[in-house]
Length: 575
Image (tube, rainbow, N blue to C red):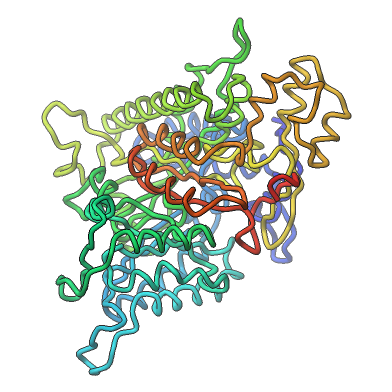
């Protein structure tokens, strides 16, 4: 079938995803890539019923080639090829010993070479002022050892299929928390890491009361001092305002949603924060393109619920099959993957969907649409997981899990839903990323070692044509960075639906994240984009609102605070 791929999609596919010969020449078409991936993943059906392999090979191919659903990048890259490592993200333990630390460094290198990302909690490491009994010296502390991981990532990133990505997390009650919070005030530090503070409920209570809270030495489990919760929180806010980091994750809230508490507690997430994982646990993610889950009704576009159900059920089966087909980097990871069978089905193209429905992003109705759509995906996805459990068996760790209760039907997967950022996947699919609003209607996207892709939102021309005000002059105006609100030929109600990230107040971003979180098993990747003139108090209020509304974490980014950023808009109002 003919694929509808943009020039940007072709660049990304040729540079990163398609097969190459030994000389680096592309020897695979995008259609052949989708055939390769679909056929390989459908092979998992043969473990249970060989008669289903061909059927699902064709259905998976249709789903991928129509760009209605795409799995995470390692699956597109590696399925049906030598590596066969298909999971997107992993969490590795970092224990308080050199053996544990350097075992994790080694495993990180292996994972990054295969296209996966890694998350770590450094909270088990003794603080920098602590004693090392074997030598009588003082400990290096978490931040010092994080530099080892950062250097390892820097050394191997050229040999892998994509740049390695890490998440570093430290509990807010660790004695070294201030040095962790402020380390990225120097932009040269930890360029291969995202950082998040694991904030506890007791810290938030101390913050509300204006009281001190204890810092706990992880080696002894005893208080090593006290700090003002408000002072620490203000330091988090100030650093995030300066550099976009650290983000925060609400670690106790995350653990309250842990489906397998008998196996372990969550300490860390994947690099973008949306996937809490246990030690050695991987997860494979995939996203439905909501812009394609629509149909024409009597009053214009409407959500096609039948198509959504078909897509969700097939995507859940696909992601479950990925678990069986993946070749994992270590035995421990292989065991955890197959014991918990965690998957993360999410969405992209939500902003596209809203435009076609003629609803403004962060308008009052948009939050209801978010809850409705994600509620359907969650309900149907969990039901499909139950059907798969009946056909293929439940996940092995189900005994002792939250699903091990009288009257509860077994499920195949311990989690089903996650909202990922879908960076390059949304380029391939030609849609808006994740649940984000449009960054701008015309911008330059930097990908793949400095390659810059100019992009103009195609919905401007589409909507202008449908509404009868299309002109080449309008499209050219937007392409050159003009603001649609300045055009007299565009109706006011249409101007309202082309909301961009900086038009949305922080509260609107947070409310949208919270709306999706209500129906998401894992967590939600969402950036709270702020204009350059935003104040530290804007960051503070965003963090506090995210906690009040039930989010599991939050990330802010004030435009212009990093030397390199993925998206650069052309509008002089914000750049």
